[in-house]
Length: 609
Image (cartoon, rainbow, N blue to C red; front, side, top):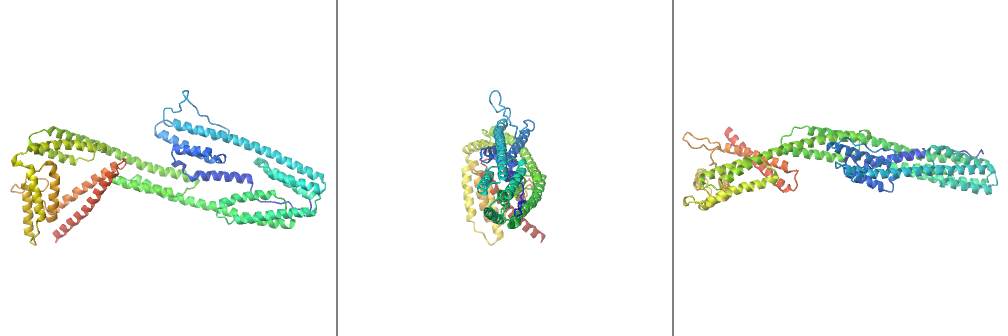
């Protein structure tokens, strides 16, 4: 070799191995962009179909295998849950094996279960993809073998050129032509790359040493190579400032490949230009390594955060729940946890699937227990429906009775029983109520029509309306005793007026209660519920405190009933108006509870004094 020529030594990573690693990293990154385990069978199938039609589908093999694995895992699980057989075997992932779709003799892919068609369709698309990729790989392998032959021919021609040792004016253009041919040829088999490249570089160096090249032409060549490599250094240094370290690393591999394509520089610049390029390379490599170390730390933090959410969900799933309102509250908590879960990134690759399976199991446990609860609740409603049907039959048996007083009392008793029975299935509720109400209305309308002069229902209605107006017009005195006497007198008059038409009973009673309460809020003229009597045979009256306590207890029961109704109908379609109405009643009842509690406390404090 000539003394002024030193072979160039590079420390760039092997390009074939780097490219392969980057391809795998890209595929893994793409597969992790979407949580495949959260997708349905149809979504996975559509996702694979889109991939199989994309222009870069041959480079997304890892992503295709990830989708296939997720599809068969979910298919196996859903088949097992549906009781349709054992786990499903995935098609082989070997690229030299092409799966075939077995079609029954009658041409119908839908067998005894609903998953056959979906599985067959997916297999068909996957088989086509495997065939296409197998053909693609064969073509690439063949092309690399052809390139190997072409590059070997360049080396042979280069050897022949070196051996000629002709005049530089004829050999140097031929040498440049061989260099251009070498650069234009594509990749060769990875196993042959290093030896082939070393052989080429050796003969290039030998050409410069052995051929009596014109010094001016050689210096010009050195200068061009130096200028090119200086630009590579500048580009590498600029890449080191790129915040996207993955992209910078990719571009760096391309620079290293291009660097090798250029010949040597003048001896005095060889060490310095290489050290400059190597320094920029080192910066990018360190940032690339630090990036992935940081990713590992973040993934570990994500794992710890997801572990906490699993523990919270498992605790909720194990709670003892006794009411539908509590189920709804806990369901909302689970949904909030699930929302937070979706905001957290991936855990470590080793633990990501495990922690997801743990979280999914806890959620499934909770909602399975909720389904069991409402299944039992449904049984209770069916029992209530049977009870109400019995009351309807009794009412219908009495609707044509002419024993006005006796039947009136019987129907009122049935109505009280009706109110005490809990909820029934929503689809039957209105139908049952209309039927029961029709039987009652039929009797009371006939009773009112046949009323005797001494029992003038409409006259009584008119009298009660007049009394209500009288109560409203009453002006309270500063004398509490006078007000109490007036209240008792009004109550007595009301009790003395007979029945009103049945359909007006609730409205007139509500109007009276409202008017009376607005004038005499502290007066209680109702008898004690339960039948207590004085020694003189008359019914005892409740104290104000007892009345408030009874009212407080009734409101609590009403709230429980409303909450149970919401729990049952929350999963039903078109139930939002009903649920909103129930919630408004709950809110109003809770406000009333607070007011009653304050009144009871005031009475108790007065009693203590």
